[in-house]
Image 1 (spheres, rainbow, N blue to C red):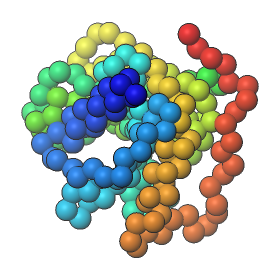
Image 2 (image 1 turned 45 degrees about the vertical axis):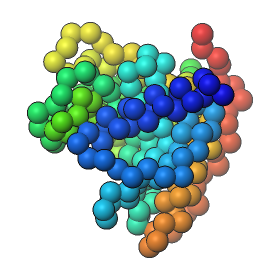
Image 3 (image 1 turned 90 degrees about the vertical axis):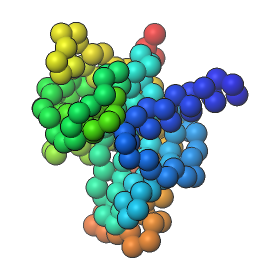
Amino acid sequence: MRGTRRWVSAVLFFLGSYCGAVDFNVYEQQVSGSWLSQGMELGDETAFRAATIGEEGQSVLAVDYFPPDCSRFLITIILSLGVVQSATGIVSALPTRLRIDDRPAYEFVMAVATEYGSDAVSLHIYAPEEQAAILKELMEGRAARFEFRIPGQTQVFFGRYPLAGSRAAITRALGMCEAAPGAEGFPEEPPPDLEPGEDAPDYD
């Protein structure tokens, strides 16, 4: 139980860093394995998030849904750089490689966003044709590994994120979005079958 409390505190710390100078109201938090799901509100802005902390302890992997159109979602890495940002906006594009378990790797571009007063950057996956497939694999797999070079630094970042509980947390975040007032949900087709894969290997 103590370890779970420390993990939840760490996730909330990074989520707070992502909000930066903006302080969202967080509610209905629930732990699912290595993941946390919750609602977030600030004035008229509402989002529903599922997230986990990276094994290196410096980043969070998050999936956000936004009412009223709950078919929209955003996959983001929130990375603490320890340097307070001086501007708000998209500052660069970052070539990234993602591998989930032993499946074929994805290569795409992440948009690097900063917020004034925050010591973190948010890296948004920009892969329109592959976004749904990436989300499905995140919900099925055991571990996700990202590789990219941090802007303004020489080292390559290797982030590994546990996926135990991801399916439950992401499904809950989506359900909270669909239950929000005025939400549209998925009017065209139901969500795909997202049963956990049985052939995904463990990584040490």
